Amino acid sequence: MRYVIVGTGNISNTYVSALGKLPNCELVGAVSRSGRALPSAPELPIWSSLDAVDQAFDAVILATPNGLHHEGAIEAAALGKHVLTEKPLDIAIEAMDRMTEACKKAGVTLAVCYQRRTRPDNIAIKRLMDAGAFGRVYAVDLAAKFYRDQAYYDSGDYRGGYSLDGGGPFMQQACHNLDIYTWLFGLPKQVMSMLGTFAHNIESEDHGAALMRHANGMIGSVVASTAAKPGFAARMEVHTEKGSFTLTDDVVTQWAVEGVDNPSQPGEAYQHDGATSAAVTDTTAHEAIINDFESAVKEKREPLAGAGSSRLTTELILKVYEAAR
Image 1: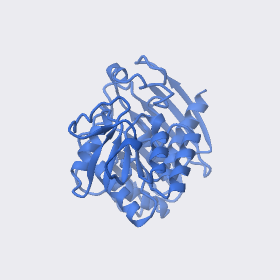
Image 2 (image 1 turned 90 degrees about the horizontal axis):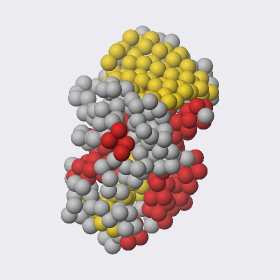
Image 3 (image 1 turned 30 degrees about the vertical axis):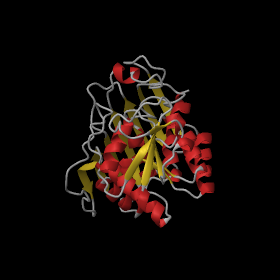
C-alpha cells in the first residue's frame, strides 16, 4: 500500500522507519500544517492538506497530536482512504464517534497503533483469557511508572495539556498499558482516582492512581506516572482462581498457574525503553501493526486494534479523569 503521513513531528520518524522495512509499502510524502519536512525523509514532498496531495495513495498514517486524530480520519475517509492512527483513537467520546462513523460510511478501514497487542506473550495471554483458562480473575495491578524531563514537555506547547494531548501519563504514555488492560479485562463499572502534578510545569497530571471494580467483582489498580525518576519497566500482575502471573514490558516474567503451561514465547523482547524516552528505535511492533492493518484492508476484517476495542482505552482514561474531578 502507498501511504501519506499526516504530521511531521518526532513520532513520524518511527513510521518512516517501519515503512522502509516493509518491502511492499511505499511512503509517498506527508501533510504538514507548518510546512515542516519529514525529519528522517526530507526529500519527500510535503503538502498542506490531504486534498492537496497530487500523487496516488491508499492510506494515511495520522501522526498528529491526540486531539486532532478525528480531523485527519474524517478528511481521509472523505477521500476514500484507509486510516491508521497513532494512539489513542482520540481524546473525546464525540470525536471518536465522528471519526468511526465517517470511516464506516466511507467503507474504509480504521485502526489504531496500539502495537503492544502484537507482542507474542500478550497475544498468548489474550487467547487464554478468552478461553477461560484462568477461571475467575480476582485482581489486576498495573504499574506504568515512567519518567519524562521538563524538556520533553517544553518541546511542544500542547504537551501535558488537555486540549490536544488530552491529559498527562494516563492519556499519553500509559495508554499503551491501559490498552492491554481493557483488551484483556474490558471496562470497569466503578472507578476512583487521585491525580497530582509534582515534577513538571504542565496543566495535567504527571502522577496518579486509580482503583477500579469490574462487573464480575474483579478489582483493578493502576498507577501512571512521568514523575517516577529514573523510569521503570511497566508491570502487570494478574491474580486468578488458578494462580498468578506477571507481564513485564509485555513479556511473561512470572508464572504460577495450575494446569496451564507458561505460554511465553522465546525470543528478544521489544526494545522500546518507554520508561525513560519517547523515542522508538525498534520498530518491529509498528511493522506488525502495519502488516495487520494491510491484511485487514485486504480481507475486509476488523484490525487487531480496531476502533471498537481501541475506544475502550480512551473511555477508561476519561473515567479516571472524571473520577478525580
